[in-house]
Length: 135
Image 1 (spheres, rainbow, N blue to C red):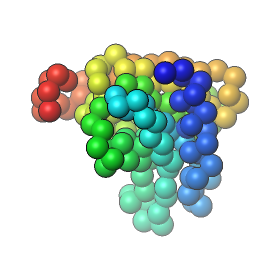
Image 2: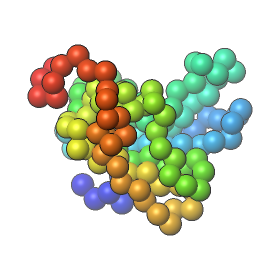
Image 3: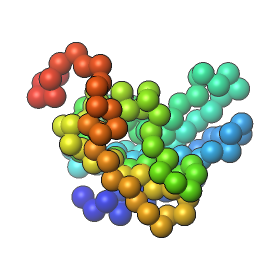
């Protein structure tokens, strides 16, 4: 999968963000191991704890459509710098990534730089119930 294609899907998803409180739009795209791209955006709520991040929206959409593992993730928007995923999203990533070395591409509003991380780098000590090779 071309990372540029995944990033463009995330930019398109960002346009659907519902952020009347923070004005901080995020778009995300995950490449499922089934070869499909699943997208998500952040969705806020007046009761802020009920809001959901773009990464989790994309991953949950993937799972709800029958795919249980992703092989790459792109996250775009937010500020001008590396808008790294929040800790809740990092934990969710560990549950549904194909392996710990799955790439996570992050790009800020300037679109001039793409940071590449792995799930292991972003969440080095995840809470896990099973090994990555089984469900």
